[in-house]
Length: 160
Length: 369
Image (tube, rainbow over all chains, first blue to last red; front, side, top):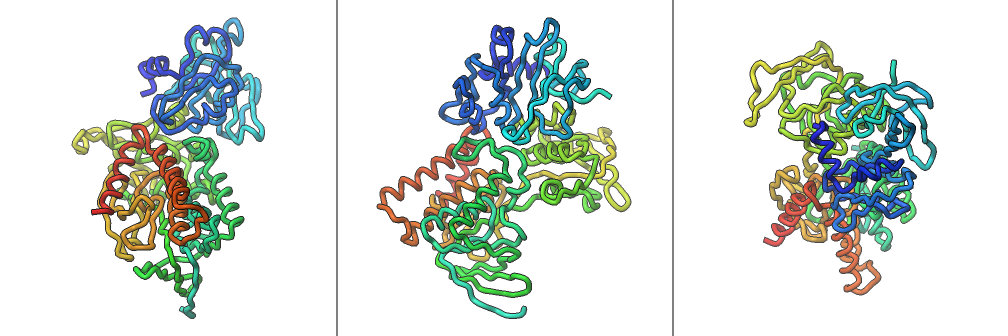
């Protein structure tokens, strides 16, 4: 469960951005594989880049056009949308994660990056903490990790 | 019993959860005099412990958290003059549409022209040696404690059942500061939405399919559980037993309709396991076979708060029409009712919804024969 085969499935799903788009900078990564009646991501996207359409159980289809605003990440009830920026630095990618735990980490905190199964992947650092009223308790934490782990890392814990 | 008095209302609703409140608001909007009875100290049913965002579309308030929807409904109910009797137990529902109520040792009889039964559901239990030990509880109970009463019942948790309730409550227990050691599932696959499972999996929670809890152990409260693998015939695989230290066990093995009042009123039932058990048959306007008594929400089959709200709205509009309070032509009224049914249909699409739609259609067809 939530292993490499799962990642392959995600990459083939209509919500996952193309490899070319991922290389170009911050982009939403939609990890939604089941036909659930749900479409707030479609409603909220200012670029109209996410299409669910009718029936509402269609998987979200993403057309690679993304300003990186992150509105879809906050509104998704499944916390299933991430933002991946492979251009963050020469060696690092930035992963933004919807985060609903307290206390919030702080900028610069050292972390252990985790994969989709909660397993340790690598060390990393908190780069940004976005919070505020409009986030309504789904805060966005951006962490940096070595570039090669950008498809794998989807959560973190604070390093002791 | 200190006394006995009679109350009157046009529409009496039993249960102030999402279905009851939505039925009340729709009817009150049309000028119906509505009274809701609820045994709790606060209306809202289970909505106030739902701190997560709901699925659906904009018209279903998707992306909004359950308790926020609860607040919106309470505001609307107040605005339209819905009366709510709290701390009041409806102990009797009679075919002549009277309801017996107890409020603080006083008994009263509520007479009404229409009734909506929106009593919701109750959690199933799971028995195993030691299952009566304190801190082995329904997942819903744990959820009420953390999200409504702000009490953390345990710090090291195991959850039995990977349906959406088990997955969501496990996530919320982590939010409340507990560690969830594992979610145990008897079937060979996760029961709930993959996105809910992903949330806790990436936080390190193990989801163990083909497993069950075989024993609860402890002196005054649960201190350990024994779990074991089970085969495809649900037999325990000998030698696979494992003991885990926990101080809270959440049982999330489904719900069933809370339908005693429906039985008492003499409704006709159908058994549909996919909806959680015995379901009162009803027509496409949610009216049961007892004329004037409607049903809405989980009492008509276990679904979600969003479907309960839409069923409540449907019942509320249908009651308004039956009372002659819809100030519009029949054609217009049918189109409003159809829109409500369409919104319900939307929520019953896809692999998690279609079987519920089919079951609901069966309930309606059984009403007619």
